[in-house]
Image (cartoon, rainbow, N blue to C red):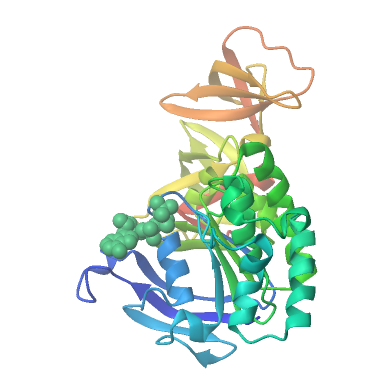
Length: 361
Ligand SMILES: Nc1ncnc2c1ncn2[C@@H]1O[C@H](COP(=O)(O)OP(=O)(O)OP(=O)(O)O)[C@@H](O)[C@H]1O
């Protein structure tokens, strides 16, 4: 497995002369640790597959460099880079048995037979494929075929990285849950660098120790699930991750105060040096705003709907033209439509042109 460095890497399908704003991947410099479990998360069209294909060597970048353990591999093929890949749909040989399918990548590399048998047995065991080893792949279900694809991706222990592109798309929802946790466990057992592309936040947060969030061709944040939840670096991360997503509302911010719809709320840090002319917003997760009975010292809100999620209730409220989601405290009984909002100042973030601003203590 390898440490992967992207150095000022960018890609445009329209040629290098196209304006940077139109690039499928805008310039990014970042490091993927040896042995890390990464998810590459973002909505359709944000550039996930482009970035994955640049790392694997399927696509050659318009700009920048890719290093594997410090060696420049930018112009090398996928095979030379020694990458294993698992795609959305099964890539297997129907006429071979499950065992032969799993053994194929090892045989190709000239591994001795006893070692192949041992590794195939290990991977089949981890993926619950042992009972099917001598069965022809063509008679198996779509789920089982995709498990074989996963096995083929994981069977070699000498790869630089294993890349997964939405690998659970064809899997039945029930089995999806099991396989997701299984992949996480496999990562621990097999000690491989894994990069897992998905548009599904649950899939990303359950699989990865580091989630890389993309938006409009840009890597907007890379962090642990907790970091993405607690301190979204970009407003997109705030509302894409979390359910309901973060409240992002226009505000005037000065010193330790934000004014929303004419009402001042306290901030934990001081913001005296906001960039001139920037669009200023505050972001607060619904978990850290509570509804209360209306009071003159609280931001007044109009309750539109309450969603009871079992363990927690969220109120959907309106403040002027702005919609908010806010927690309903346990035991609070809602009467009428009027409410006040109580903010946890330590959880209110300030954004300038969508980017998180670090305040001063
Ligand atoms: N071969 C190509 N030629 C031209 N444009 C492309 C090509 N592949 C992708 N694009 C464009 O690049 C942008 C990023 O696409 P990409 O497939 O990387 O996104 P994605 O996040 O993986 O989306 P999805 O989940 O839908 O695959 C999109 O605007 C897409 O239309």
